[in-house]
Length: 92
Ligand SMILES: [Zn+2]
Ligand SMILES: [Zn+2]
Image (tube, rainbow, N blue to C red; front, side):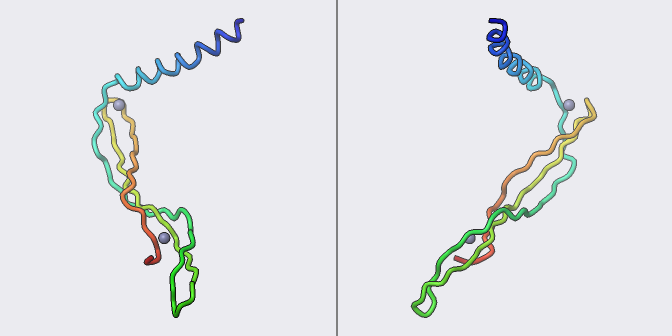
């Protein structure tokens, strides 16, 4: 019985902790902005050349914009990444 009560109370505590975090006032200011490209996966694509079906390999990379914020009230930082573009290395 005690174990069951513990299981029910646990998620509620987590929710409360999140609420406190949201209610806290921050003074986020943009500190720096970085652009980076991360290669994620390759995939095959097909194209026709001289009536023969060819297989090509294309690399997909993600163009990310990462913004670093600084809060001088608590002297801490946070980073936020946004996906700007999905790039294909080959034209297809
Ligand atoms: Zn803060
Ligand atoms: Zn592709």
